[in-house]
Length: 467
Ligand code: ARG
Image: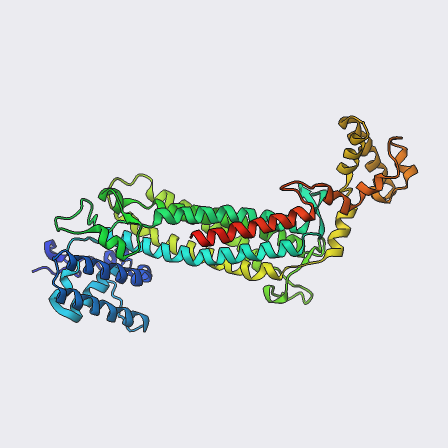
């Protein structure tokens, strides 16, 4: 008679599991989060087994009622999770047998924990992707509306973080939106490969029972059963793809965060973030800190870490299932939670960004941001671009010495550098003239920004319709 602690596989063992080993190998403390999906998968499996005649209808009903009751016990916090029972799967199965007797032991016919856990994670990821997608859409909508509102608001555009050329604030926000549009595509693409059903692969080779995997797949809303049983129990590509999506998304949110942090500083003074997204300092009474963007920027690191964990977890694993795979859950759970929370924070915050228009305008006016416009003006009057570049360079040097922006110089002053310059130069030296002149698809002109916002709106609702 076996003395092993775990009755579900204790038959061939002659001594109980070492107490530390039992704790070391158990996953129930974290994989209990998969309980709803585990029960959902088991109900579908029981239905299929009854349909193909492996279970009687009465057995199926007893199993399904038992599982539904267990679901209630878990939701009410009454379920007694046991570490000796190792994981969520055996905890639920043991409880089922406790409740309905020997029939409970028939649920595991034609499956293994290997295909069971792979199915559970995929169901979980599908649910979480759908929640994440709602937040991502909300954020994109918020950005599109902010950009539309601020289509005429002028700010300095930067390269090398030095003032380069004037742009509109709306154009800048739509650049953010483009990053998220690509993330959105990656998420939906990842979902396609998540939504494939491993159940039926059993331990690794399939099963001798006359199962119908198309039935189970349909009951669970999967697009199709997986093609190969060895691949089905060992594949975690979808987890790597999700954390890869998550890493790129967080990299984007981190870049946006960095700009928000800079913009709220007194030195930039470009925007205000409402108090509800900031906190104070316990020692410096004047402080209002942009904690939300800072924290999002900081959380990027852990998500990159999860991607590295999963890539490394899978490297060198021989087919098919290996216990290593138990380590996929914690990185995945944390990646899901972090992405969802960061998107929610951003979706709440972005529509509340208050641009300080006068301050942005002043900053754009200061840094010779229309120098390129002056060069282009000279080229239009027949000066070669290289010569125009030199002429404008001299004008800027003069402006630095006299502390005048190009638009503040008199015609006489400008004509010192080129006789070609005439009164009409002031039309191109204004910030409004500069942005309005970039009037092509993808350009910063206010009417182009409004058109781009409209296209983005349409692309987003087309996605919604197709999803
Ligand atoms: N707790 C395991 C996991 O998360 C379930 C599958 C275990 N399978 C096995 N043959 N030990 O991967």
